[in-house]
Amino acid sequence: MKLISLYVENFGVLHSVNFDFRAGLNVFCRENGAGKTTLAAFLCAMLYGLGTSRKTDPDENDRKKYLPWQGGPFGGSMTFSVRGKTYRAERYFADGASVRRDSFVLYDLADNSVSHDYTEALGVQLFGIDAAAFARSAYLP
Image (tube, rainbow, N blue to C red; front, side, top):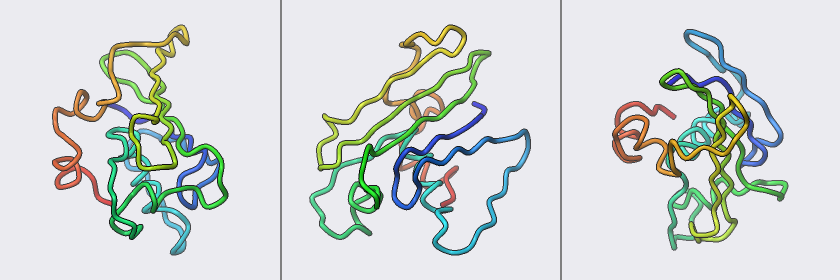
């Protein structure tokens, strides 16, 4: 998989931000609190979704931790290519604890049609590992 771009509509401190990635290593060097860790969490959430938790402490509940500070829709999109095709995945999260109200749509960018090549289990289907294994191996927040 090649990551092409991310659009964060609202996720924690990030609001209406585009990130375009180039071939090779992409480095984000910004001051503390600018959203670097939030961007890494957003990428993970785009691939695996956000789980639910009854915990009220935001450090133990990602849905609470990354609720947009300014309100509004909670999520964004990711453009990527894999196996010769380019897709845009759009994922939005319900502001409560329910995953059932989350939304996921995948578009084939060859013709902007809705694609069923992958489901909301995108990370598992692309990498063959679940979110916990991804967090322990490939994901460095």
